[in-house]
Image (cartoon, rainbow, N blue to C red; front, side, top):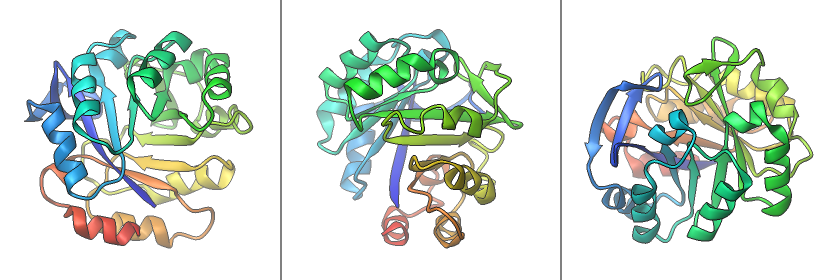
Length: 240
């Protein structure tokens, strides 16, 4: 299992928010590059970055912060938030992003995801953000009428590298993972699933690994990592 420490960018700073609501942002570090280096130095092999402003506005807003992260670490970075066109994808791949995350367009313009995955094999991930059973779009400001498995199955044979499934109802709450919900999606598709939203302790990682069925390939670490509830070395040991 691969662990992805999250760096959510709002107004150039590293923040954590509750249920994706930008008005609830708590700033944890004003220097995105330094934060990325801290996680890389702690032993994490990937960094998960989201441009929160960009996700809402539909274009890159925190590009400087992303560029600072890319220049500060040598571990691969996956980036989402406001990436809506093939040109956007190309820009970030050329800038050094190892994996581009597409969310809103996966619901509204799935052909863009399929084309991107064809152009950049294993460098495209699909973000499936679920609120009360339905997939949210536009930085979680609106809901679609589609469920997670319906969206995920659109890309079963497209060559995407991963599905990042976020439980919006638990995101930022440190309530613990809904392991059954993540597992149901992992069982339904062949694409590797990365779990996000609600991680509270290393016990969640143990439960993810112990469930029967298709393995969950990864987990995003957010508030529980920032507030010290999760020790990086312990979490990495469990994942390994």
